[in-house]
Amino acid sequence: MINSRGHRAGALGLLFGFLPSASRLANEKLRLRRTARIMAIAVHPYISGVPHRIKYFERIFDELAKHDDVVFWTGEEILDWYKSARPS
Image 1: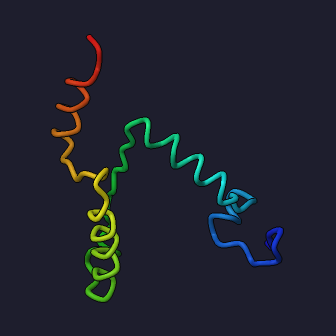
Image 2: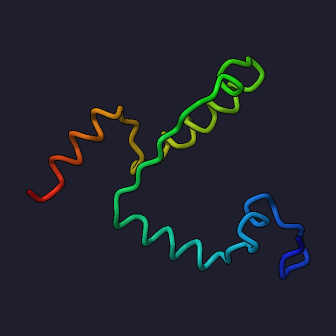
C-alpha cells in the first residue's frame, strides 16, 4: 500500500489501511496522558528463549524505562492501584 506521500506503508499501516498524521498522533498522545493505560506483555519462548533476539527485547524495556510516566508493575500492584483509585 502506498500512502499519500508516495511512501510504502508499514505493517500497521497495512493493517489499518492508513498511516496516521503527525497531528493525529500528537492529539492521541495528549488524550492518553489524561487516563491510565496498561500494557500487558506476554513473552513467548520464541522471543525470550533465543539469545540473538533478547537484546532487542531488552532495548524495548530500556527505552520505556526512560519515561517518567511509565512504571513496571506486577499484576498484584496493578490491582492494588486500581482498588485505591476506584471510587467505592
